[in-house]
Image (cartoon, rainbow, N blue to C red; front, side, top):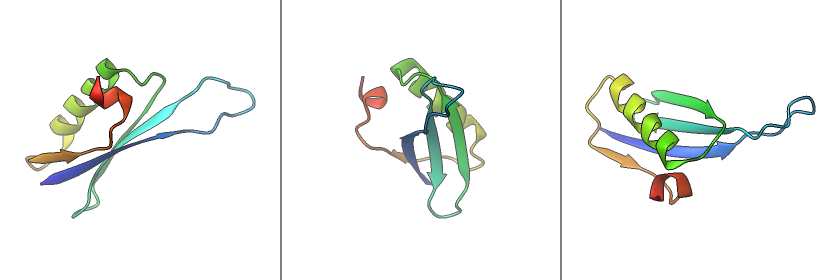
Length: 74
């Protein structure tokens, strides 16, 4: 099973100026989704996201598709 990984920055709210990003793993065939809101885009955070994604996904993942985001290329 292939999972597509994506990252997006959330908009800042007036009362909360902390930058947040969303990491998302989506199975294109079943539309199964796992997401996390994070406050840092580090390689350590990205690796932890992938570990949790693989553990929670109900089918064996054979490939993870992703862009060249800095957090995944360190």
